[in-house]
Amino acid sequence: MSLTQHKLRQNDIQIELRHRNILRTKLTVNELLDLPSDTVAYESVGRCFLKQPMENIYGVLQKTIEKSEEEIKNLQSQEDALHRNLKEAEDYLRELVQAKKASVSAD
Image (tube, rainbow, N blue to C red):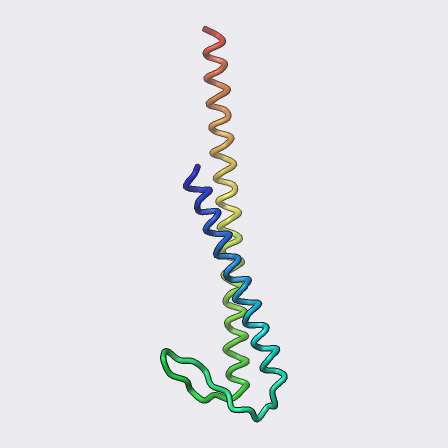
């Protein structure tokens, strides 16, 4: 049961990180939209920067947002499954305790 709770906490942290990534990427897109279309832009690739048209930069940022949103959906479905497992474990333990109490009071 504590393992499930640990996984739930990790899952929440991952979801929060993805939300922050989306926010940061949207802020970057908004800042880039303020720039003229002929502005020179560079994309980070490893330890170097490649000159790219602004459309490519927007595309990369949009893909990053879409990927993060998809990961959030997957993490939320995992979280739902973990909540179900935790509820089942709690119910099982509750039944065990009640059965033990019933057997002790019957003796």
